[in-house]
Amino acid sequence: MTDTTDRAVDGQGSKLRQAITGPLLYLFILGDVLGAGIYALMGTLSKDVGGALWAPLVLALLLALLTAGSYAELVTKYPKAGGAAIFAERAYKVPIVSFLVGFCMLAAGVTSAAGLSLAFAGDYLGTFVDLPPVPTAIVFLALVACLNARGISDSLKSNVVMTIIEVSGLVIVIVAVAVMMGGGGGDVSRIGQFPSEANPALATLSAAIVAYYSFVGFETSANVAEEVREPRKVYPRALFGALATAGVVYVLVGLASAIALPSSELQKSSGPLLQVVAATGVPVPDWVFSLIALVAVANGALLTMIMASRVTYGMAEQRLLPTVLGRVLPNRKTPWTAIVATTVVAMLLTLVGDVGTLAETVVLLLLFVFISTNVAVLVLRRDRVEHDHFRVWTFVPVLGVLSCILLLTQQSGQVWLYAAMLLAVGVVLSLVARISGGRTRGDRRPTA
Image (cartoon, helix red, strand yellow):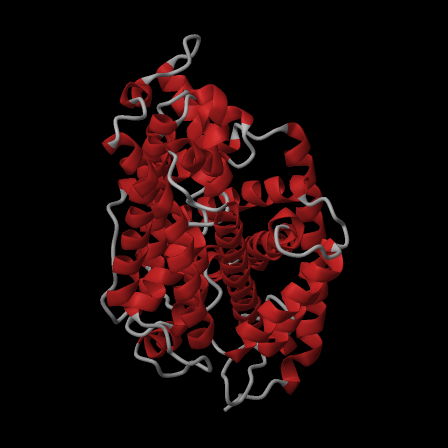
């Protein structure tokens, strides 16, 4: 196992093409973290913290950095596709645990992509053309799959363009409020105003739970580690750089939102950033933000499907899923069977229509993935590898576990019940995979 990992570090022994450079990886992570959620986030946060929107965003960034530190150590130590599931397999040596960790990641990625495809086909697209949501969402997912199958390099080059557009929308908000302040408008005093009845510390913690979700997405980068050039050098810089960039942008948008509008108006709007720009008096057409939102949604769907297909491929390589899902296109070197399987599941989920509760459950399941990863760092300190890798201070994964537990305590009973049902499905799939793996083990041949 160690030999395989060491060879993957220098590009040998991997069926996937190492096409991801440092800048591409940075933009991959940044594009995944800076998702469509930020465009509706400020109104929700304002209900808890009033105008002090920056406070929960800073706290959420610090909590996310704890788990990100654990990912940086494990990815540079074991740069293999599969991410958290591979870390769990190495640390715990219990197949069902490895399977369930990977299953949680799959549920998160596929369900997120299904929800994003429906969002793409909804009101945002309705600004330009009126089409039936579900068929449009299915066609959209098929197009995402085609881009995914073309190769990680082509996919991430598209991500570069979409991330730039995504960030430009947030820059418009920041610049528009700066122009407003230059003309004597806005109220800077609001950035320190909490609701009169709220305890600032408790309000910040409560809002940080929501803000934390805006930083989720960095974990998907672990699933393309096998396709990164020199991951032990590139990955930590790209990961921490992207999170820091997202944090700065989020805080600036939070400050701008509070300065431009009172919290009472932010709370009432389902598109608070549109209201913020409108309040500045800077002439920005509504369709511009609709287009930017569509790009943000499309980018999020592409990146989550890249993650889901790589998790599936990695688990198939470890025989946690049927080995047929580990097949790759000979020229493109992309996991085509995994892409097809995850896309079909996402398409089926769009038929459900309402994925709200499932999306909340996925967030809960991701917290279990993060707990597993943080604990795995400590367990795997005993496992030595031949190459140098990033290493976090021991207290970082400990605090990472505690932060995830803190966030888990805020979930509702309904979400816990739904998660239990999904995990039960995962157990059944694990048994099916084990039987299937036993039948095909003797027929497995190496692929050139």
